[in-house]
Length: 426
Image 1 (cartoon, rainbow, N blue to C red):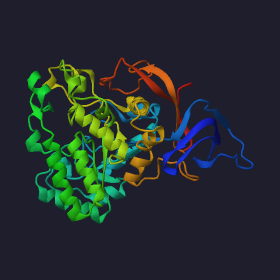
Image 2: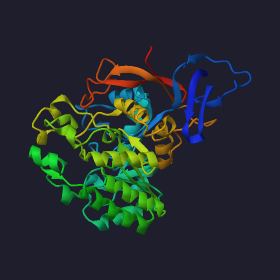
Image 3: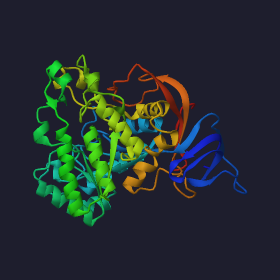
């Protein structure tokens, strides 16, 4: 299909583009920006007046639940939710059942995503077999099966020696190692940030040193092995500062933060609000402000959803017995635009953290509107107001602390490789 997107404000952070222009698409790829190519006749003309046209969003941490936990969500349901929120590329965490530690599972997930036909799903391979933290997975085979990165998610690594060997192995294949930093010994038995709020509520806490200790250890191993590494879902100011220092020294390390960590804090769990039970936990307001600053400075180069859909019952128990996680895909854009409204980021910077930033970290051809690049495009109305959790909500999980609130900013149309995969008006 040949498509012309007219009258929109085109923002492409990767190429420092921000102008009122038309975008032309043919053969599933970007054909031109600005002047209409000679002889081009559009099969469909899309009027994007008053809207933003940008590269499709890229999410570095999505729990798709399939295979193994289809009672929570499926690849079909969550990729539908993703494209309705402007995401065209998702990184699927390896915590499926079975875990992504063989090419067969990686291929299965990609095949099911292709059948769903919504967005591109990039499986993240397991760093260790079964995520057990004891023996290394076959990373070379996982890379051949389409895994651009490996991770042990939030599961413990048996020893620093195992982590070192894993990094060395990954480095030989130039695989990105994604680390969710948490010292299991320091966090064991905890549910929320250790501090005044946890003491008042009588809930076992997880201190920020559980994160900073793990970051410090990993950074030394990264320096030693030279592996490309990425810290996922940072939650503390101290950890962000440590990453900033390492980057200044030339250590090949990047980081992301979950969108909800930029708006919520430990205060939001008051009243034992299970919707705010997340891992890593919501920390202090100072941590939240520090994370915002790190995003603004570019120390944190990507903002992710850390999407974790749950069935209703998973959040209906005493706080300690509920399952952590937020179904966050559909609220990322409004939160992003709120950062812009509050003066934390410019619109270009905010979109960069969702497009060019994660694409660059992954080394994947997406997140840009170069001529000839895949036509993954998101069009959104930055002023459209809607109620979180209304009839437009598509995720199978409704575990989101912003449910019922009024959000500003909504996707109207999403294209993946030149095909319209979501149209709010259809």
